Length: 87
Image (cartoon, rainbow, N blue to C red; front, side):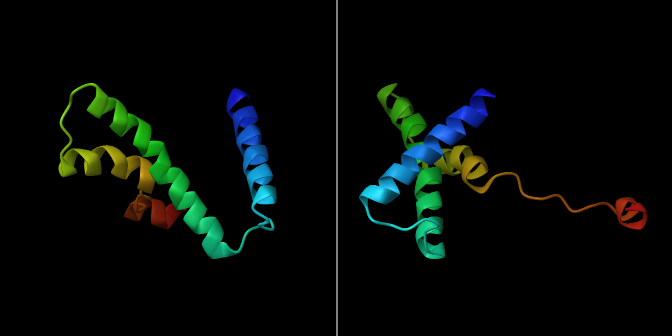
């Protein structure tokens, strides 16, 4: 339930920002997609900043491995041949 309330609160905040920027909602598709990309990338900034602040060196491979799963999400698995026949 807390997650749903947090999502509602975030949606309300975005709605207020849209209003302040005079963007009609729903936003044009490219604006919405760019905004979602910004959200996904922005969520990665604090964990990376914490690592830097903690004295850990950042490497490109570490950033790619840590951020890739969150930004891209789990990729869909291909159903097995048996699931195809039964399902």
